Amino acid sequence: MSERPVRTRIAPSPTGDPHVGTAYMGLVNMVHARQHGGSFVLRIDDTDRTRYRHGSEEQIFEALRWLGLEWDEGPDKGGAKGPYRQSERTAIYREHTELLLERGGAYRCFCTPERLAKLRAEQQARKERTRYDNHCRELDPEESARRAAAGEPHVVRLKMPLEGSVVVEDLLRGPIELKQDNFQDQVLVKQDGFPTYHMASVIDDHLFEISHIIRAEEWISSAATHKVLFEAFGWEMPVLCHMPLLRNHDKSKISKRKNPTSILYYREAGFLPAGLLNFLALMGWGGPKNPDGSCEEIFGLDAMLEHFRLEEVSLGGPVFDLEKLRYVNGRHLRALPSDAYVEAVRGYLFAEDKLRRVCALAQPRTETLGEFLDVTSFFFGRVEHATPETRKRPLPEREPVAGLVPKGRSKEETWFALRIVQEALDRLDPWHHEALEETCRALASEEETGWKARELFMTLRVVMTGRTESPGLFETMELIGKPRGMGRLGDAMRLLGEPGKKKLKKWEKAREARRRSAAGGGAVRA
Ligand code: GLU
Ligand code: ZN
Image (cartoon, rainbow, N blue to C red; front, side, top):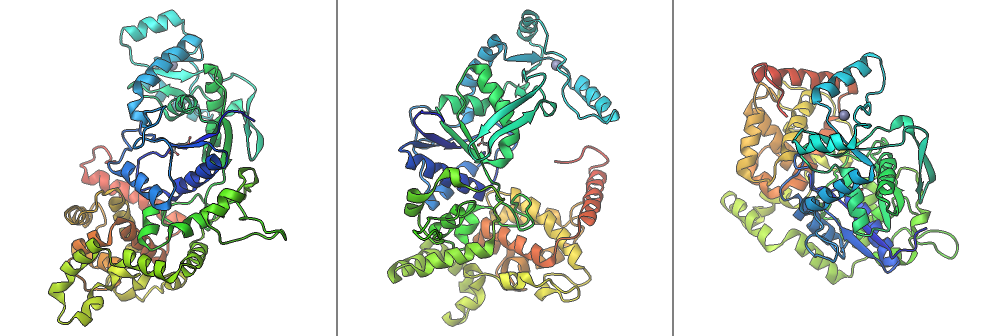
């Protein structure tokens, strides 16, 4: 194992809501660094401009800080090795590309998209795995440099071993052998000159002097590429540790279709940072051990700092079980001193700004103060159709839950309509009432849901408020906020029941066709 000072990092991409997986990695990386007197670095992987989402970076900071996961170096904090945003490091990547080409670890590939498409088609016709055929690997370096200087478009590819395998050492798994058949000469620098994830990540992990790369299991397949790249540069490889993936109940990778995945959702839904951290700590770890060998289930960050051992993490895919989270959170909540509980409730329910905005909607709609909660309860509590209790009961076909399923529509049609709403609203940021209205109106069209605005809005109202009457739908949604709004949408869809795989496939096809014909037979919209 490396004798270097311990430096760990997380490297989220600002492409959407701050993810519970980022919180999990943040927790483990922070704890490991603290335990060894090391540093915990926050890097922002924002080289993919097509997936970049404005505001996402700030939300990552906000969510991690809410949890109490504080980093020592990062874009907002600075540090000796910055900048910590990949988009600000392009000159560094360019320099290192030249270096790697000189060392012979990589080469320029001038293949045209047409050639690559043809290659792909031929491989598919032969039922072979599609991969690059190393066509440019043996190009004369001088010729290559000349063509590049003349402005010929190209990418840069890594020379992977042509035979055998690459063995990477994983802290939890021991040696993992990755076979050559699965490699191809990966693109390191794209045609536009920007580095790919592999290139930027390896360069930064080296320059930031990261000693332990602790990240999710899904990156194991990249580890061979990274190892070859570290060696091509002549750099020491950090210790690798791939943490088990958080999973849905059905063991698939945690996804927002099956669980709320935004950290901010859990804050808005009234979970405590201590509860969520405790729950995440239990993913793959039993908890602090008692002298009799049993494990403590409920504990705080201090106890984790004292007892957690990265090497002891078990690999069976831990299930992100909401009922368990509620239980753990409940234990923390009930253990609060009564004054702290009062403060927590006040901060959660009656923050000044929120109260003002709810009052603005309630005032025109009440005759006595006693009616205040009657018209506003869904801003404060959970909505009725979507409690965990009702979620467990499947919805009978012919019993529209207080208007969730409009007259003449089926549960299934409603699920599909909400699926379209879910996709569109997930992309919407900020969740402002005007933008919400515009988006939802556009979805009430032939090429989208095929529903009338009246039907769609009523269903949405029931999804968001549990009622058929409420203040203006879109102002109400804005105030409920995106994390909880998306959570309620997911709850309603779970209650309706997800259609089978076959039906889903068929529906997706039909929808593509609908969109294509609406676009006048032209290109498919993204
Ligand atoms: N940017 C990658 C992500 O979004 C980082 C993966 C890694 O930790 O290397 O997860
Ligand atoms: Zn080529």
